[in-house]
Length: 130
Image (cartoon, rainbow, N blue to C red; front, top):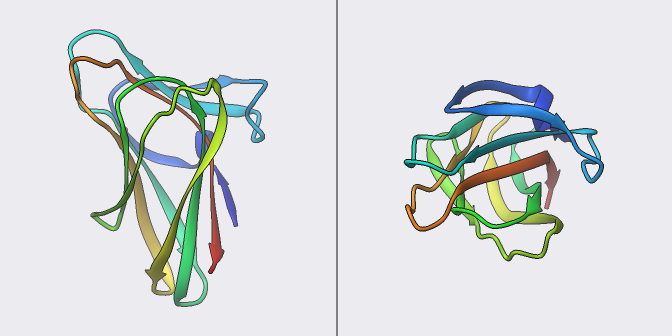
């Protein structure tokens, strides 16, 4: 299952916006960019899982420069996206995630390191049985 993040957001904290990007396979990217005083930045999504099992989560994002992105599932961090500065879209996969059937909350939180801008340009989340 693939969730285009720009149209699947259910809640956010901070200045998130949707922008059409040529690199985004879902056409629009969900973005946040803060160059001043770090602030809380978080975007949340719902994920419906039909069958309990072990899954992989893949986030497609633009690999620029900025604070790390924590990926949180049902309140627990499942991993961190660390920018590599390639200037290209990448997919960060988090494997071995056990999910029960039903709805799950997924959030992306941007770090608050003052030495680096708070930045994210997110395309989609793909979820598949592993």
